[in-house]
Image 1 (cartoon, rainbow, N blue to C red):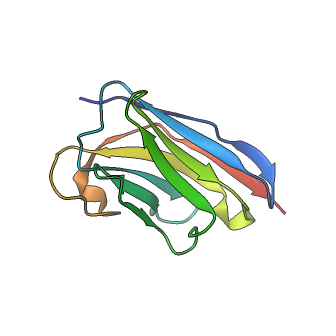
Image 2: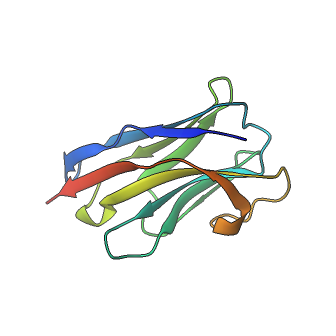
Length: 125
């Protein structure tokens, strides 16, 4: 079992930055991948960024060049640096960890066995 706790959300104006953190209850450096998802009101959950155990990253087209995912194995913490934020980035952001050590399938949600409770990000124009 892995417990994930997100933090760092808040309200910012367009063009601003936020850094989300996801603290894991145990070492997650050897899981297949970890990821950030988000869900806006009235919309389906979507993958934002993922990182596998080799530190290869995947980003949604909408955030490429603006968001950066990273993982600090020593601190068992996943980060999402969000720059040049836009109103359409508003939503609840969730951290997720895969339940296996195999191949990382990016944003395929079925591979993620552990989820955090979410942290709200609101971007105003």
